[in-house]
Length: 261
Image (cartoon, rainbow, N blue to C red):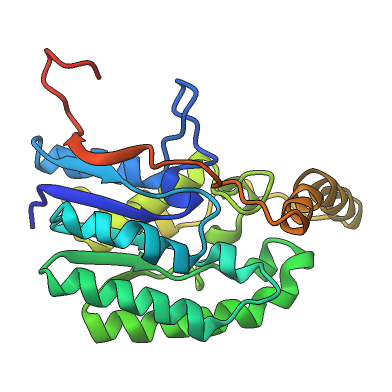
C-alpha cells in the first residue's frame, strides 16, 4: 500500500529524543520511517504531534483529535513508557487509552501501527521490578491491536532490543541506531518495499558484562538520569511542559526544490 498522509503521535520516542538531527533538533524513528515511506510515495506528507514526557492519557487527550483532523491514512501510536516507570502505573488504564485511540483512528480507515515494549529487566538490573508491568502492558496491547486490526512491532522476544548500543545513556530513549532499528521494524510490519527482518538480528561484538562494569554503569545511570527524573517528579514537572509538537501540520517529506529543506 502507498501512503500519502502519515501522522505520528506519542511521547519522546516518537518525537525523536536520543537521535540528533544535526541541526539542534531531533530526528527519531518516525522521521526515519517517513523518509522510507517517501521513497515509495515521493509526495508523502508527514506530521509529528508527539511531545516528550506525555503519559498515554495525555497523548489521547492532546494529540488524538489533532491527528484525526489531518485525515491520515497511516498513523503510528507509541506511548506507555512514561506510565510504566511511575508508581501509579496501571496496565489496564494505559491499555484503555491506547484502545480508545486505536478504535477512533481505525474507524476512519487509517492504517494504524504500534509496538510492544522490550524486556527492560535485561537492559538494567535496577529495572527488574518493571518486568511484570511490561508483560501485562504488552499483553493488553496485543489484545487491543488484534481487536482493531492494528499492526504491532514485537520487541519483547528479541535480545537486540535490550542491547545497550540501541539505547541512550538514560535507558529511556533509543540511540540513533535504536531509532533506525525501530523505523526498520515498522517498515517490516507495514510490508514496505526494501524492508525485511534484519532489524531484529543481534549486533556483532557484544560486550561481556563484568560485575565491576555493571556496578559502575548502574551508579552512573542513577546519578545522571534517575536522580534528575525523581527530582522532576517531586516537583510535579515534566520535560514536556510548555512544549509543542515539532511538526504539527502535514508537510512534504521531500519538499520541492523551491522550498527550504
